[in-house]
Image 1 (cartoon, rainbow, N blue to C red):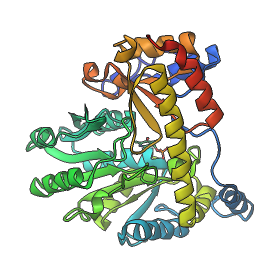
Image 2: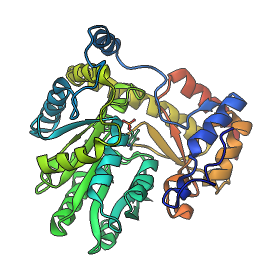
Image 3: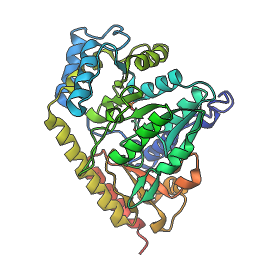
Image 4: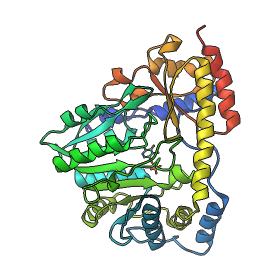
Length: 394
Ligand SMILES: *Cc1c(COP(=O)(O)O)cnc(C)c1O
């Protein structure tokens, strides 16, 4: 058991004492449940990329402190990736910064760009580190809630507009969106961009699921829209794209002055990290298009498999256009409290999921929604479906 942080934790972080993931993973282990809670793949990324990491280690590349902004090979590969996939041109020397995963990129961006008291507008439900990082930066978070509309969680553009005040410093965007699986459309992103330009806001955009989009959904990087290149800090990472979540190699692309600001904060967080892995990720970014297509196809099939099992079990399924999560509504099962449901699910069905309410400030808005990860082997997803079938009401 982990002990409570409460007696010592400062006021800024008091509300973030423990995450649901620790509790749910412990519950999974204790009950022998299938863990569809935390989102990490149960198979590693490409063998040749693992070999590239081994080679770098053996050749003594990156075993000592790499350069603060990241090794040149990786910065060049990140810039080439932005060019190849989106037609965005970044200078590897002044407009790319390598970080310890997207997590550090988010933390460093907020610590660098937010003044105490500034408001940060973020899409709710949000990735759990956003709220904590805004708090560490002394900012005030202002959630704009995505709500179900036509089978997906959508952004209400009037609400977004209304959330911006004279104290707003930046918009914190995430697309493809965890936990809902929503991929913001070009129209939605254009409205976000117009608002940012009109109110002279910075935008930090978390695009770690950029390659995990399905069917006819397309990922549109905010930085490609008019007026955004110079005001957008784009964040991504190798964890989700290459199935190496333990390597913690992420990056920021932005205009030189923004990268310099983020680097100022980053240098006092980790300074540098993951030396040998940086070389391997440089190779990964240069993989041919067939790698990215196969990744997408594999996850689309897994999405369909889990979504079918969940539908069969009686959940309302919001079929995700991106990410490797599926959000469900438990009300058709006669349930309404996602926390209670997820705490009882391991005993009832031998499956672990996460209550979306943990990703909300307005907990009641998220109460009936529950998230399952599908970045798992097909047999595991099939077995989860079988176990959940017993929940069906009729
Ligand atoms: C997984 C995840 C991250 C963290 O990425 P790392 O590279 O592992 O630090 C950031 N944002 C979102 C939305 C994620 O799902």
